[in-house]
Each structure stands twice: as C-alpha cells, then as structure tokens.
Image (tube, rainbow over all chains, first blue to last red; front, side, top):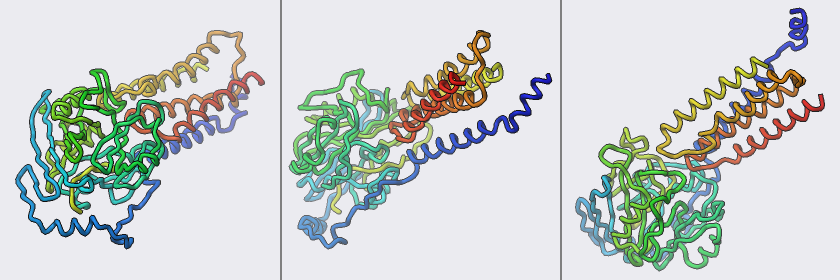
Length: 316
Length: 117
C-alpha cells in the first residue's frame, strides 16, 4: 500500500497524456472526415465563353435553332437538333428508365458541374444542376468530386489528369465525332486523349459493353457496389445515337441491378459501347423539370442525392 | 497491466459492435479495415498486456513506453476506422495514410523505449 501511494505521488496527472492525445486524435479524425466529405477544395471556376468574350459559332447557331418549336410530350422531346424518347420497363424485378437520344451534333451532349464549379465536395442535386444549365434531359455523372484521382474532362476542358491508381480502372472518352472509347486509365494520358479530340472523360466504370459484347461477368463489381443497386449507365448505338439508362433499386418495388444485369440490358438495347456511371443513391434521371425515377440512398426515403456533375442534353 | 488489458478488451468489443452496425448500413459494401477493426486493440493491446500478466519474467514497461505504445495502437485503430469508412464510401484520404504512418512510428518508438529502459 505504501508503495502504491508513493508511485501515485510520482505522477501528478496520470491521464494527462491520454486525455490530450485522445482530444488531438478525435480532432484529427473529425478533420479527416470533414475534408473527405464536406469541405470544398481544389476549386476551378468554369469560364462562361460569353462572359469571357469568346465567340462561338455554335452558340449563335443554337440561339437561332431555339426559334424552332420543339414537339414535347410526357416522355419525349423532339426538335431539329436532337430527340429524346424515354421508355420505362421492368426487368430483373427492377424498374428501368431508358432514354433513347439522337443528336444532330455532339455539342448537344453536355456535362454540367454543381454550382458551375469544378472541385472536391462541391455538390448539388441532378435536378438543380440540370435547371441551372437549361437542360432538357439529364442523368447523374461519375461523381468525380468524391475522389482525388481519376481523369475529369467536361465539355472540352481537362480538369484533372491524375489517373486512378491500380490497373483495370476503366474510363470513358466521348469524342467530337460522337464515338465512345473505353480505356484503362493507368495506361493512358488524359492530355493525349484531349489532343485526339475527346470532349468528355468519365472516370467510374467499369465498361459494360465493348464492340457489342458484354465485358463483365456475374462476379464483376465495382468496389462501391457488391450487389444489386440503383444504376446509371451511358451507351452508344452508333455515333450521335445514345442510350442513357437509370434503374431503381434498394426498394420493395425495385431490387436493383447487378453490373452483369445492367450490361445485359445495355447490350439488348443495341449498344456497341456502354459504360457504368455512379450508381446507388446518385442514380437520377431528370426530364423537363421532373425527376423520373425514384432515387434513394437508404431505400426508405425517395430523395435525390447531391452529386458533383451531370450528363445532359440541351441547347444552352 | 490488468486495468490496461480490460480497457483494451472494452475498446475491442466497442470496435466489433461498431463495425457490425456500420456494415449493416453499408449496402453490402465491405472493407477489411472496418471488418477487422477490433483486431488492432485486441492483438496490439490485449495480447501484450496478457503476456506481461502471465509471464512474470517479463519486466513491466514504464509509463513513457506505455504512453507512446498506446498512442500508436490508438492511432492505428482510428486510422483503420477512417480507412474503412472511406473505402465503403468509395473515396480515400491522405490524412488517413499519415495517421497510419504516425501510428506505426509511435508503436515502434514505444517498443524501442521499452527495450532501452
């Protein structure tokens, strides 16, 4: 007992280090989480060509084209520049929404960024970004802002040329002639792709269909999704003729699709190339001011998740 | 040492429960860093404490070595927790990697100080 008392006297504050270190560690952990999920950073503001004084013949053409009255129905939009036809069907116990898009020019297939800003943790809902950009139709993109790596090219601007580490990470390039190319990021140079005429590079994946054949098997999954989920995919039937697909999932009405099922659907729709975009709670399809599908993260509530970017069809 | 072992055991149980609950809400996405979160305090904490309790021939460490070593285990456990959260969400953070490195340095320093004492 005497020894114990002596040893207690030696250390005046026995838990001082534990308390101080615990506080520092907690603070560091909270900061790491905020940095990863909340704090916007690495911001690049998108320049408006009209504000910067740049002239663009396409813009003038589009403004003239707007005078042509489009034909709009509940599930379609047709004008002289493009057409969007949306069909809905059920397969694999899942509600699937497919937009068949035909463009007269690749410039009508556009990408929108949340707040018009490129950066980490800059987010907004698909519908808000679509409305800000004057879109006719939109789906969520690859949610680039959730990661620090992965090629990001939108509307001809190369924002990030850092490939995702590791092999087998496939990205999608959309070229000026309307063609798609699915490639391994680690073995590619984003700047070279830009010089070769890429307008958009999406970094999520994997590729679902290549040369008209399914390229994933029943065991294939992205690390973020190990089973049936809501999905978003984009595919090309031929240059300027595209399929944009969103499926529901995680609800009693819709189980969701595996990547293999998604690839099979894209193949059955006639896609020669098809690519998986961000899914889960991000999966959203928007048309003429309305969210068409039932986006959900938890499966309990139908609510749009905020994302970094969208792919949209529009004149503006 | 017995008290230390009990604390590590309690932390291991908390980590196990936390990872089980977290995995329930992760839509089938798993990370080994979250699944095996409990292993850090169990293997690096309980086992050494148990060894000191059972093997009387082992000289008990002094406070400095214990503090530094415990700091390393804590940093590795929190780093593993963060890595699990980030992997399940589909992202990554350089700050988590720094914490993992710091944890390993603390752990090694604690062992070296114990040997030198």
